[in-house]
Image (cartoon, rainbow, N blue to C red):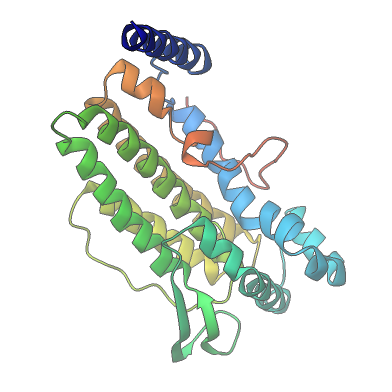
Length: 286
């Protein structure tokens, strides 16, 4: 009798949990549209490039160089000398917060004295010291994203549904981590791009994004050429988001999509961008 009562109690608890899940998660959320993706990407880029480094991670550095940092925040173009000074200061913020940033992204890649004999974008050589090399970190995110999508594609057995849900959440996080790394790149000290020949559509859009972000690194901050290159990078990232979204939606059922959520949601640890305004928003898609 006790065993039967326990079994009934467990079924009731399970039913209540399921009811709670259905109340908390919208059922089968629709895909983000092209215009919604572009709007979110602009805000994610701004959050990565300016809002978080300036106002959360680097408050003391910003206070000590307030006029320069406010000029960047307001979208005013910097001179070549101002851009070099700003990028060195910005790099110091990321270096100081490296332990925290490594906890947030396991793919963060720290390199020491990287390409130290090559000219960089601030008038010196290489990247001295031990720093998060954004190109390598983003490439590691891409590798992890590829693995996540393979798990989505090939999940099988009794736990296939749970595997797809977990893999989709991981894929959305790795996708967001890419722009969180590369959004900072045009603000930092770095060396020229090392292009990689793409092997598929996933890497094709990634390499296009990388090309334009890296070009922006060598333009004065907030200059017209900088803005053009950042916009081209974001256009490619939009296509990367669309590709990943389509791949996941093609393999997950309605309930699985409900539990995994859409890209850039709290389940995949997407950053909050409420109240953020992009310095240079792109024109919305028709």
